[in-house]
Length: 78
Image (cartoon, rainbow, N blue to C red; front, side, top):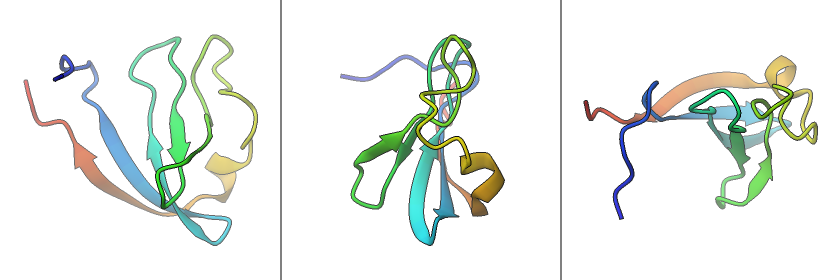
Protein backbone atom coordinates (compact mmCIF):
# COMPACT_ATOMS: atom_id res chain seq x y z
CA UNK A 1 0.00 0.00 0.00
CA UNK A 2 1.32 3.41 -0.94
CA UNK A 3 1.38 6.07 1.76
CA UNK A 4 0.37 9.68 1.16
CA UNK A 5 3.02 12.34 0.64
CA UNK A 6 3.98 13.89 3.96
CA UNK A 7 4.77 17.55 4.58
CA UNK A 8 7.71 17.88 4.92
CA UNK A 9 8.60 15.01 2.56
CA UNK A 10 9.92 11.85 4.20
CA UNK A 11 13.71 11.44 4.27
CA UNK A 12 16.28 8.87 5.36
CA UNK A 13 19.75 9.87 6.54
CA UNK A 14 22.77 7.66 7.14
CA UNK A 15 25.18 8.40 10.00
CA UNK A 16 28.03 6.87 11.91
CA UNK A 17 26.91 6.54 15.54
CA UNK A 18 28.94 4.83 18.25
CA UNK A 19 31.16 3.32 15.57
CA UNK A 20 28.28 1.79 13.59
CA UNK A 21 26.24 2.78 10.55
CA UNK A 22 22.69 3.82 11.44
CA UNK A 23 19.71 5.18 9.53
CA UNK A 24 17.65 8.08 10.85
CA UNK A 25 14.09 8.81 9.72
CA UNK A 26 13.03 12.26 11.01
CA UNK A 27 9.55 12.83 12.40
CA UNK A 28 7.06 14.04 9.79
CA UNK A 29 4.87 15.95 12.19
CA UNK A 30 4.77 17.49 15.61
CA UNK A 31 3.68 14.52 17.77
CA UNK A 32 5.32 11.70 15.79
CA UNK A 33 8.66 10.28 16.93
CA UNK A 34 11.67 9.83 14.69
CA UNK A 35 13.17 6.37 14.23
CA UNK A 36 16.80 5.26 14.35
CA UNK A 37 17.60 1.90 12.72
CA UNK A 38 20.75 -0.20 12.78
CA UNK A 39 22.33 -1.68 9.61
CA UNK A 40 19.93 -4.63 9.74
CA UNK A 41 16.84 -2.38 9.95
CA UNK A 42 16.25 -3.13 13.65
CA UNK A 43 14.76 -0.17 15.53
CA UNK A 44 17.25 1.20 18.07
CA UNK A 45 15.36 4.18 19.45
CA UNK A 46 13.51 7.41 18.73
CA UNK A 47 15.98 10.30 19.13
CA UNK A 48 13.40 13.08 18.89
CA UNK A 49 9.77 13.95 18.28
CA UNK A 50 6.67 12.83 20.14
CA UNK A 51 4.70 14.88 22.66
CA UNK A 52 7.80 15.92 24.64
CA UNK A 53 9.97 16.47 21.57
CA UNK A 54 12.66 14.32 23.18
CA UNK A 55 11.77 10.99 21.57
CA UNK A 56 11.94 7.92 23.78
CA UNK A 57 15.12 9.07 25.59
CA UNK A 58 16.90 5.76 24.76
CA UNK A 59 19.56 7.51 22.64
CA UNK A 60 19.63 11.03 24.06
CA UNK A 61 23.23 11.51 22.83
CA UNK A 62 22.43 10.81 19.17
CA UNK A 63 22.46 14.41 17.92
CA UNK A 64 25.67 15.28 19.80
CA UNK A 65 27.45 12.05 18.80
CA UNK A 66 26.39 11.40 15.19
CA UNK A 67 28.96 11.76 12.41
CA UNK A 68 29.13 11.70 8.62
CA UNK A 69 25.59 12.74 7.70
CA UNK A 70 24.45 11.61 4.27
CA UNK A 71 20.96 12.00 2.84
CA UNK A 72 20.29 8.64 1.16
CA UNK A 73 16.61 8.96 0.22
CA UNK A 74 13.93 11.64 -0.02
CA UNK A 75 10.36 11.29 -1.23
CA UNK A 76 10.30 13.24 -4.48
CA UNK A 77 6.55 13.03 -4.98
CA UNK A 78 4.54 16.25 -4.91
